[in-house]
Image (cartoon, rainbow, N blue to C red):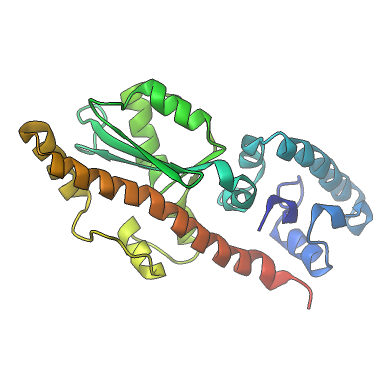
Amino acid sequence: MRLQNSFIAATGVGEKTERKLWRQGVTHWDDFEADLLGPKTGANVRAFIDDARDRLDAGDAGFFADSLPSGSLWRAYGNFADDACFFDIETTGLDSARHDVTTVSLHRGGDTRTYVKGEDLTADALREEFEASSMLVSFNGKRFDQPFLEDCFDLDVSVPHLDLLYTCKQLGLSGGLKSVERAVGIDRDDEDVDGREAVRLWHRYDRQGDDAALDRLVRYNREDAENLQTLLDHVHERLRADVFEAHLPG
C-alpha cells in the first residue's frame, strides 16, 4: 500500500468514508472526483490531495506523519522505503541517567552500519545518520531507543518514527522482538544472545579486552536492525491485505 491509495489523512474522512471510496473503485488519488462526497468533505479531500502531491514530491515524510491518524504511518513505508532507517541500540542498563549506549546499528538502503562506544559512536555521527533518513523504524524505540539516545547524546530527533511494537499489535502480534520474529517465521543466526547477554558481552570486551565478545555483540545488534526490515515487509503486506485489499471492488 502506498500513500496515493489513502484518503484518511484528509479532514473529515474516517475509515468508513475511505472504505466507501475504495469499494466504488476510487483506489488512488488520480481516481478521486469531489462530487463523490458531500461538498465540504469533497473539497477537503481535493485540497489534501493537491497538498499531498507536493509534499510527496518534496520527500516530506513528516507531513504524512502529522496528517495520518495514529497507527497509520505504516502506509507511508512504500513511498519512503529507500531511505527508511531501521535502527536498534544496546545499552548497559535501562536508565539513561546511569547507563551507557554501547552499540547502535542502522540499516538503510541495504547497508548496515554499527557504531561502537569509544570508537565512532558520537552525537555527530548519529545526527548525520538520522538526518539522512526519511523515517525511522524500530521495535519499542519510541519508548526506549530514541529517548535513550536523545538523553545520552543531547539529540533532538524529529524524523518520523514508525515503532513496530504498536504496528505488530494491530495484527495480534505481541511480546518482545524475538517472540514476534518467531511468530512470523524470521530466524536468527545466534538464538542464545538476548538483552542481558548483550550487557555481559559488552563488559567482557570493555573490562577484559575480549574482541570476540564485541564481535558477537555487534552481530546481534546488526541482526536486530536488519530483521526489522524483514518484519516490516511482512507486517506491511498483511496490513495492506486487511486494510486495503479487503475493501476493493469485486
